[in-house]
Amino acid sequence: MTALAIRVEKLSKRYRLGQIQKYKTLRDTLMDHLYAPARAVSSLAFGRKKSPRAKDHVIWALKDVSFQVEQGDVVGVIGHNGAGKSTLLKILTRITEPTSGVVQGRGRVGSLLEVGTGFHPELTGRENIALNGAILGMGHREVARKFDRIVEFAEIERFIDTPVKHYSSGMYVRLGFAVAAHLEPEILLVDEVLAVGDAAFQRKCLGKMEDIAHQGRTVLFVSHAMSTIQNLCSRAILLENGTIAAEGLPQAVITNYMEMVQNDTVLSLDNRTDREGSGTLRFTKLYAVSESRGVSDTVCTGEDVTVVAEYESSGAPLKNVSISIPFYDHTGRHMFMCWTRLTGQDWDNIASEGEFRVRIDNFPLMPGRYTLNVWSEVNGNLADWIRNATTLNVVDGDFFGTGYLPPSTHAGMAVNHRWDYESRS
Image (tube, rainbow, N blue to C red; front, top):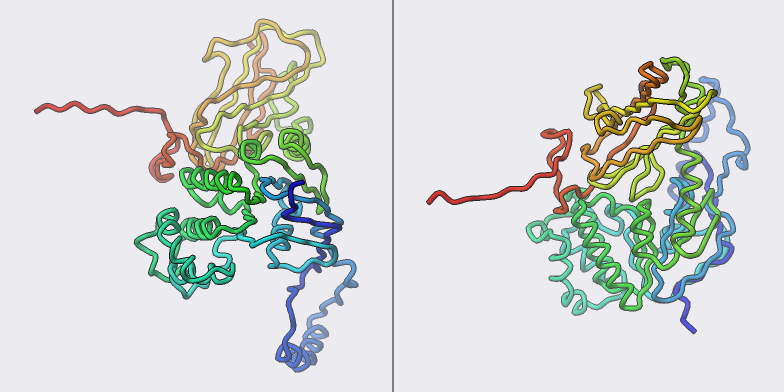
């Protein structure tokens, strides 16, 4: 029987809104008593209302969460923002104490939860590597033996003797992951912080996590990239409102999550009153489906994206239908257009309800926020036209397969191209 690496039983974490939870020193207590009269006078002078009872300010980040992770498992943790994913990892690393429940881990724990977690800003990269090794219980010789590999992986040779307070967020992440992965913890916990790195470094990190898993060590990985969860993890856990909504094989859990996401992110167009056209055909929904996130308002530059326009009509099947979805940047500049007439795909006959899908290979827009319009024509007449029907966030992706993108100040779109060279000598 495989040994358990992590056991979590009835784990709960409660926070009080508006309060910073910390341990009070004697100095804190004395200062509270000293300033209490002044605070009371201030409340009377400005008519400040008394706070509601404490129980009205309580939220449960986690509530009765129970699961087990076997040694060597790679488990993905997914869910909405605020579902409790990061809180769970902070409890597992003992950064945060649980309100109730049991957490047991077998072996040393390495983690990368936030940019700079575990680093002292005044110390250099070299000194922070030694400090993290000591925290993990490693001897000086063991850390020294792995030092060169850590620095090479992090790609910060030039800055290794610079205080980390001068590092960029990307440098922090590269060094943080390199330390967490190479100091050989039995359990590695990684949060979505890897999204800060560029595409090439993300691929390197994912490869390292695969190596760690093949060595029999355990990985818990929080991510919104469903393709990564699918490819890397043997199991997945879906958190919703601090509880486990689903657990099991990645594909089944991801499907469950996508259904939840679609219900939350796909906005209805039924109530839009600023539309133009005869109404012979009416759009009801407009949303994007990406490889990395499924149904989402966020896609990556370079991945394959499908835009879906759902529609309905009250009459008989419609004839001679043309559909267009133009894309605009935040300044209103027209970036490009998807139009059935351009591709020779106007429909001669369609049903009274359904959905149009347009696939965009290697999505070309640079990172930013964009607006989509949706337009339809039936038998040569404008049927429905909704401006600003939805918005789409575009984030860094690996369009060229090199880990590089043009600077955002130099390009609005990425275009496939290939160079050649010929000598004249």
